[in-house]
Length: 422
Image (cartoon, rainbow, N blue to C red):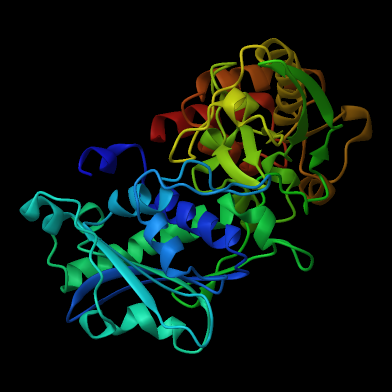
C-alpha cells in the first residue's frame, strides 16, 4: 500500500480519476468539497450516479478489482479508487447507496490500521462512527461519496484543524478548479445529450477550459487528419485536429488571451492534447517529436485515441501521460512540422505590418495593431527576437508600446532600455 502511493498521481489527477468513476456510474453532477473542522481536514467527492451494491463496493475497494469495462468507460486498470485516493491521504472511506430504500454501505482503508495490524484490514464502520460530511449527500438520493482524511500528502506537517491547513486547502482547491476544467472540458461544455457533466468545487461550478480557444474569431481551425495505425494486427484511424491560436494582439481582449494561456501558461501548453473517450489525458508537450519553443507556442493539436487502441498508446495508471506508438511517429512528425510552421508565421505577424505607401494616421495605426516600418520591419523582428528570446512577455509589451511606429533607431533604443531594465 505504501509503494502504490507513489505511482505518479498529483492532487488534480487523483481527483480526476475519481470523477472518471462517477461518470462511468452515470453521474451528471459531482460535488468536490475541501474543508477543515474540529475533526480535521478532509476532501470529499460526492456524485449522483447509480451507487454500488454491497458486493460491488467490496470489489471496488479491493486492489486490482475485477469488473467489466465497456467501450466508452473512462476506468481501465481497476486501481484508481484506491491508488488515487491513498496517494493523497492515509484514510479512505467510501459510502454508497444504490436504491432510495436501501441502506448506506460504508467501507474504509486506513493505512495506519493496516500497518499496525499487519493485515489487509478493510474496515466496515457504522454511520455513527463517521463524520457527518460522509453520509449527508446520500440522505435523500442514490450515489457514492468518497472521503479523504489524514491528508498528509496535501497538508504536509500542518496541523490538520488549523488555519495553515485551511489556507493550504484553499490554494489547492484553486489549482484543482483549473485542472478539472481542463481535463473534463468536453463534458462540461455539453448543454444536452449523454455524458454531460456539472462539477461543483466548494459549491461553485467549474467552468470548462477550451485549449483551442474556438470562440476566438482569429483562431485558425485547420483540417482534420486521419492517420493510419496498425497495432498487434488491428487497424486504427487516429483522428488528429490541429489548431493555431491567435497572436496576443489578435485576441478579442487581454482577459481572453490570459485565459487561453491555460493552467500551465503559454509555452508549456503548446503541443499535443490527447483524449481518451473525450477525457483529456495529456495537455501539451511534443512527446519527443520536437522541443518546446517560444515561436511555436500558438500550435495545439488534438488527438483522439480510438476505442481498442489503449495498449498502443501506453496510457499510464494515473492517466497523466501516454506514449505515441512508434508506427505513428513519422506521420505525426510530418503533420506537426506543417502546423508549427503555420504557428510560427502567425507568431511573427503578431503586430501587423503596414507599408509606407498606405501610411495610416497614428490613431488608425494603433487601432489596427500595426507598425509603420516598411522594408525595415524584418530586420527589427530579427533583432527583437534574438535579443529578447529570454523575455517573451516583455517582447510582447514592447511591441504594444511601439504601436505608433517611431523611427527604427528610436525603437532599438527603447528595446535596449527595456532589456537593461529586465
